Amino acid sequence: MAPGHVPTPARIALVAFPGVRAFDVSVITEVWGVDRTDRGVPPFDLRRTAADPAPIPLRGGLSLAPDRTLAWLNRADLIVVPGLDDHLTPAPAPVLDALRRAHARSTPIAALCGGAFTLAQAGLLDGRRAVTHWNLTDLLRAHHPRVTVVPDALFLHDDNIWTSAGTAAGIDLCLHLVRKTHGAEAAAAIARSMVTAPFRTGTQAQFIEHPTPHTDRDADTLAAVRAYALTHLAEPHTVAGLAARADMSPRSFARHFQATTGTTPLRWLITQRIAAAQRLLERTDLPLPEVARRTGFGSEITMRQHFATHLATSPRDYRLAFRHTQDQREVDMVLPHP
Image (tube, rainbow, N blue to C red; front, side, top):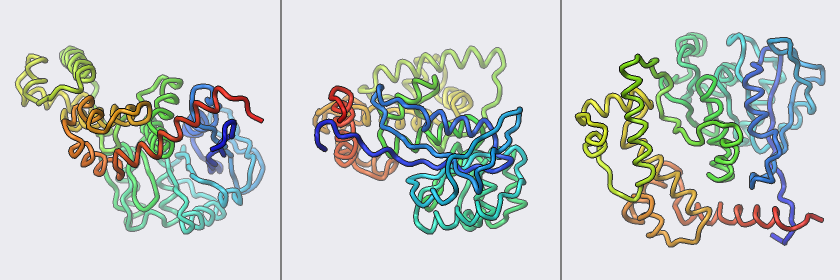
């Protein structure tokens, strides 16, 4: 890109109609509707699309003013559907038709929480895997039996369609989509401004029991172990070694770790190593073997295998895609725009 070039903003379409949840609308707006280019985040063009321009009432005395019709979905790079206050709310026929046409064009579509019901109404989840809030899985199965409902995941992807569990999982999915398209640094910058966790995997369990005072103490111990592992990622870690640091047996440690975090110690460690490797690939010119060593993968081959499994790309291709983006952000931040 030429110096001073202003990158074309990614076009995000929020699909709205009466009955959508104000919280999900706010999440989508907070992730893609705030200008954070001064913090290295790429520009986004978020549009509120609807079947007609009339204000849409939201629960709590709020309203949403559409600024584009559904025709704008033809231009969108990503379409996001909020959840619903009443999960059986029928979506307007023009909305369902527009979503079907968008999917036929291979435009990525993401639904937050009960937004899966809207996609199911459109027939887009027939024969596909989908997730929704853990308390709605039976309802989704009952009303849309052709959908393969996954009961215990934060978010998942099937055939260019993303679905997520409830509330906070919608934030996780939105940040994941930013990370997937614009890199870990952009997603982390947005997460920092939202004061939320920058990285939770889609396979992490939705529901974690509220801790009792005893397990509160265990959670504090486990948090200290996780902090230690994060500051010593280059070192080899085993469940037995981490358990010893927590003064627990390996079996007890693994059980408490999963109850607290929703995932296993080794899965958690792998996702943290991948995230750390992404940051180094974006920020530095370190050779790939050194990136692998610093993040605890041990070898470039092992790191490449995990990138292929979890990110469907290689470390080299990831660097080519996102280091260029990072370099351009830095140019855009220091050079005046014409």
